[in-house]
Length: 300
Image (cartoon, rainbow, N blue to C red):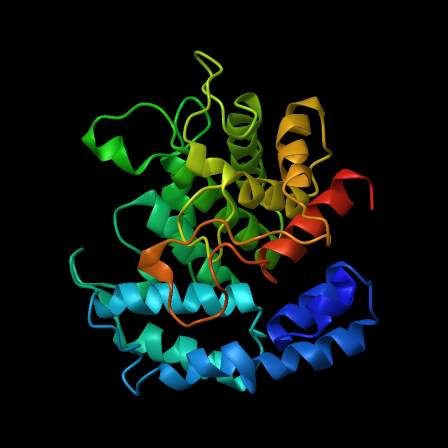
């Protein structure tokens, strides 16, 4: 079975994205497949776990954090934000949950950390919620080097890869949903330059690798940085590849196996919500993400 057929022989959440991004299938066929995410497979499983008060049961974490993780997963699965199922799930969170450790603020008003707020902006913009206040806050928190850092409140003056990618994704999702605001576009470009100047995983000061985990590809990513996630953002933002991306793109290519697939190299235990894939095995999530990055890098 070739790699595309292998991806199509999967959950609707994988199929519709492969059809759109790798096969350029007609929009109506993609939409029909995407609609199945709410009714079948992993998407339906996540939706069915939500309780009437907006919570997802998870004994090891707070209700708002569990909702945060599950909404991010629904976003990654590509649940159609216009669907009735999405409207119900997001509405229950919006109307019932607050960040109880941060002034009991409503869920879509965010909390104090820009990494979390960036992801809340992503969720809110994707699902049609009002997050303008959070966007304005994040614009004011960008650092001199172009990045963002959750440790700024503790005195840090340098950006963080984890925080920066979360904010970049949020600002881009908001920009795509609401139209161009020059100040948002400028902040995105500065944040992208922060990553590009460091070639996605190197220290600016010494050139050394910041963290070997940045070169390990995971799914879901939640708030964790890796090179494939960063390249995926650049692709979605329409950035033209340049020489500063060469090493990162080569890293992605180097991980392709003899069957044209990529493995799930790592998972973040704090956001393994439902069983989808096995660690160390070929991944139907990492593979299409890698393929669409390479397609973009090669001008496709």
